[in-house]
Image (cartoon, rainbow, N blue to C red; front, side):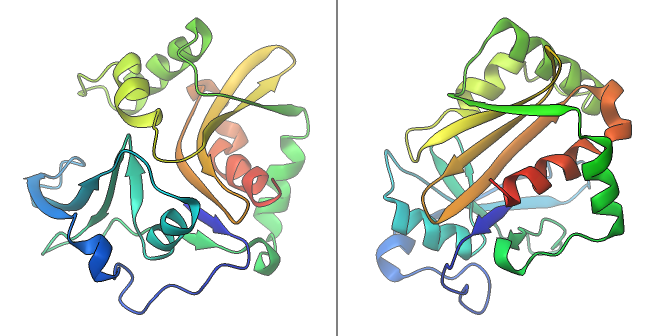
Length: 205
């Protein structure tokens, strides 16, 4: 999910970028990572670094980040992966979102650089084993290959109840936009609707 502040509206079509950038992209076809039995097509490029303005344009047109790779989905028979863009000034929480905010009033957030701490890795490993029991990817691989990047400024938001870590958001950011790269949380805290809690926090970041 991407949060823009006074950003340009995305071009029609959702994934159009200019010719200068497009020449770096290739299409890669793989088995669907969500197990839908179809071919997934990643329209992607690898970059050593991207300035904030260019990254903002890519995000506004539906691109996402994985490590130093920027990609958009171009699957021929499925359109289930839909990037979401929000503008804080236009957002109004509904009743359910206000309820989520209230029941998480005891949660405190802190910002730090992405780090493979023992605490972070233990929480991510538990999250992955619960959500994706068939996956062979480790928590360390998620950090080194997915979360950490040199493309843009990346940081973590760590959510705690007292001293206990209950969730971590991986976020890219500039003065004009935030990009929610990934969020993992304690499976026992699902009653808090932690994904919604995280988005509500980012909107007001």
